[in-house]
Amino acid sequence: MTTETTETTETRETRETTDAAEAAGTAEATDATDTAEATGKAEAPETPGPPRRSRQARQPRQARSRARVEAILAAADRILAGEGYEALTMRRIAEESGAPVGSIYQFYADKGAVVDALGRRYLEAFERTIDELVERALADELPDLVGTMVDVYAGLFRSQPGGMTLWAGRHLSPELARADEASNALVADGLRRIVEHLTGGPGGERARRATRMVVWAANAVLHEVCKGEGEPDPETVAELKRMLDLYWADLRARLAETARP
Image 1 (spheres, rainbow, N blue to C red):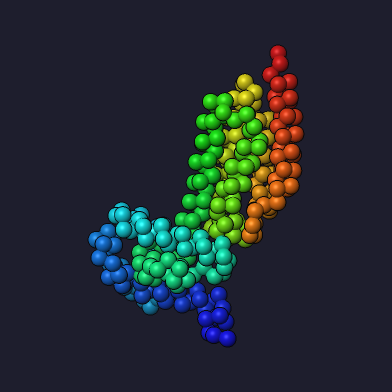
Image 2 (cartoon, rainbow, N blue to C red):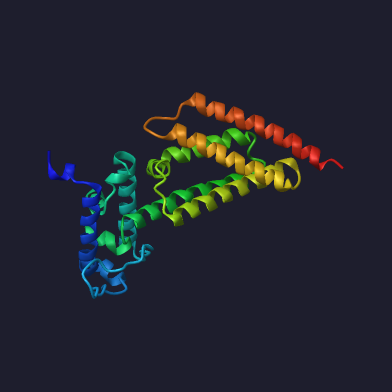
């Protein structure tokens, strides 16, 4: 058995800390184009150890650097999906993406920064989707509200296997956890707007509470049926639709009753 297959997570993290220290002084030499973008070479720390670097990703401005960032994030997604969270290291990302380790450190200070960037990308896809569904609903182009929303979001879950790994293991930084809560709130608010459009008036706290519960319930079921390989069990997805259809019918009746003079 090789050393690579037996090394512990602690060993990998220690080695990556060393990589970070080395990369801070050499990253700009890895690519002339990236060097032109960099704000300046990191100064050596006064005491031994890696320099303090922000986890906030440096935004690429040139096409070549943007392509490199895309390759880095795509590689990280593949590693998360196929090998799991513990296998995600900066060296492994470099191997999978073909980018030098030092180049990765130009954009991401550590593994956590890569995970945060991926997580934000996953959440942005959900937010764009609810915006599109709201537009369709307001244009009366959603005859099957529940069926369409379940199918669309199930497709999103399946298209983000790396995200499924992150959320299933709750490998979220405090910042990403807050972003997750905000994203769920945004999806619930979009659903509330759809509900109020279809019921013809403001639903108040009842509609807000109901749409939050729909998001929580649908998230829980879709996370469960979409994890692992293969397509989600169609019978389970059908049961989710049936459950939400019944809840939707009940909610419409209660909102209509509340609206009566």
